[in-house]
Image 1 (cartoon, rainbow, N blue to C red):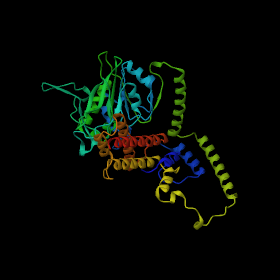
Image 2: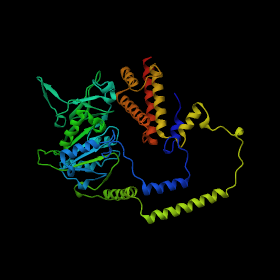
Image 3: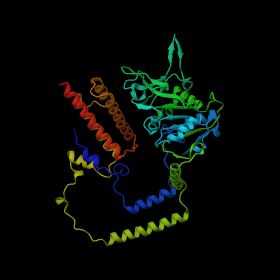
Image 4: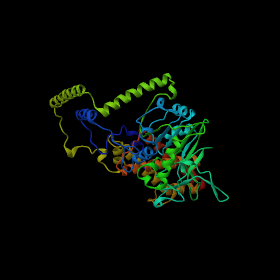
Amino acid sequence: MRDLEPAVRGIRHEGGALGFAPVRPVVVALLLVALLALGRPALAAFEVNERGWEGTSELLELARAKLGRERVQIVATLDYEALAPADGLLILHPEVDLEYEEVSAFLRAGGRVAVLDDYGTGDRLLARFKIHRVRAPLRPAESLRDSPELAIALPAVQRVAGHEQGRHPIVADVQKLVTNHPTALSHPNLTPVLEIPALGEPNATLAVTGIIVKRGRLFAMGDASAVINLMLRYPGNRAFATGLIDYLVEDDLWGRRGGKLYVVTNRFRQRGHFGGETTLAGEVRAQLEGIAETLGDVHNGGLPESLVTLLAVLTALGAMAWVGVVAARPYRRSTPRYAAQTPLVAQGGAAGRAAVLAAGTTHRALVVLELKSALEEGLCERLRLPPTTRGRLLLAEVERRKLLGRASFEKLARMMADMGSAEDRIAASQAPRVSVAEVQRMHRDMLEALADIDRALETRR
């Protein structure tokens, strides 16, 4: 297997778009001024204002049609102090750590929260309620276009004497729901709402719900993409979205609700305390969030004219100083090209490949793809499978031979799913966010998994 340790350790930062050359400091300063003055954030997947196939504008229209525009609040900052027990909170694919204390207090007061998330940070909040992510079935009983990533989910029901029982109101009108790269959920005692039937393995729970501390209700689902514009063209997905909207604001046994529906997506801000209670840590956090919000307002609305002029003058002076320094710098004697040493990045073989991956301008996602290729190559070699075998087939073979324990296998499955997701986003020209810690964790987990498989194979010889 290829030795990727130098590449993993050598990464320092994202380095911008793939393949960009280093940029002069003066150009960077000019670009920053232009972005601060005129820039606008690009819309991302799951955004309610995005009318493309991966946005959720149709979900917003459904909510407004059922509840009215005044009862549907699309917010970029989730103010817990503004929430009332009669309100509902819909969280789509969060990319920030949700405040467990505030969400828990909201639920205890009778609020309702729905977290639709597959690969975001929602699992950290759900874990506090003993809801954990597990892999979706590798062989779903039914899928769209025979793709396990587009598995068909069904309402979780029981049949007694030929009669259906246990269907949750959220899926009252749902016959089938088409998923989109889902993850499954596990919980010891919450009510299953949707499940993915599987062949040769246990059925997987896609969505659960339950009462939290007698009054509040929490709904969790392992597929945020089920409600994007593209998926709402399927009748079951649209019926599910309608049922979920009703569920979040409908009346409860303890009284009439009729509150507002708050919707947040992706990377939103959080502030305030539910019920108005404050702590020292909360005050510090609120101050930091206020600073971040001010910077965001500057980004959206632009800088004051006087400040823009000052920055332009300072940038011009800096450019003049840089030109003067460069112009006065003596030329160094150049080494003839035929006598110059060939840099590592221009060499072939493992050394050249490692140098390219370790370069500061190389996107970390390329290292993830290299790790994925190395992992699949290592598994094919150990399992004596054709070198073209990939992904789920490798996982299925590892599981069939029982070469890993349950915990190790699930870790391997999650890692391969993360690698596959990164590969899909790169193929779609959407460079994923990958941190140094994530790359190092994947590398470490990959080596551990291959070592465990080696030990299992050695024991059976």
